[in-house]
Image 1 (cartoon, rainbow, N blue to C red):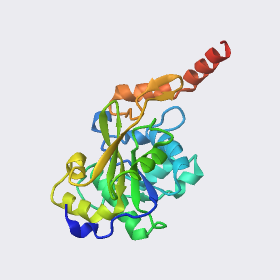
Image 2: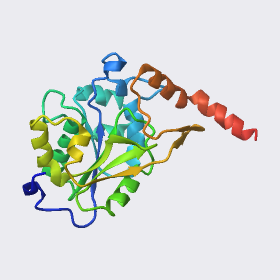
Image 3: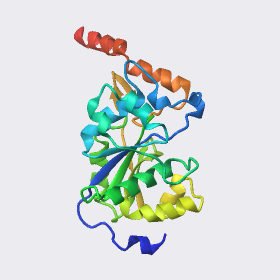
Image 4: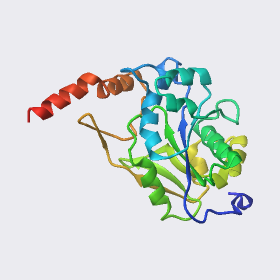
Length: 241
């Protein structure tokens, strides 16, 4: 860790910019953008934004997909059309850390109301907690200043879900330019902590809050959990009790 990048450690309230990381190449889903594929009248990205936008004021999307395709997938929700879309500054698909870096740099350069942190979610993880931002920020306030916080569930890390101090943006850029790609490898060079989240209930089904859609079978399960039929069956069963 280079101390020259930490001359101004965070002191005071944590102010947040949210980023949806949507840069995956979806190799296991036929190479198409899985987060844009239609499902039950919506898509993964729209579902993620519907959970994320109530939790904070400023959100951006980090993606290397064509912005026009993203806007088209969000055309039924006018307020989502205004969400900025940024691409990786570090070239050659350097992975999720490149998306985190671009979001940190965008937040720093645009001076978003004195933002101190970026908080990230994945575009293929549709059931993350509705109190995710509040819980992560509350935990971070009890940690060493400028700590990185990663989410966990069932004792397993979910490093794409993290709270990232913007003061580390140059340090992360240096690491990426030096070939670092694994999130935990970079995180472990800095003060960090982790926070465990409990399962979510989705249409009556208990599920890991960081269930992500990686395989065609995952996509099928996501469709089943979010279907109108499933909702109506659950409502009918509850009415009969």
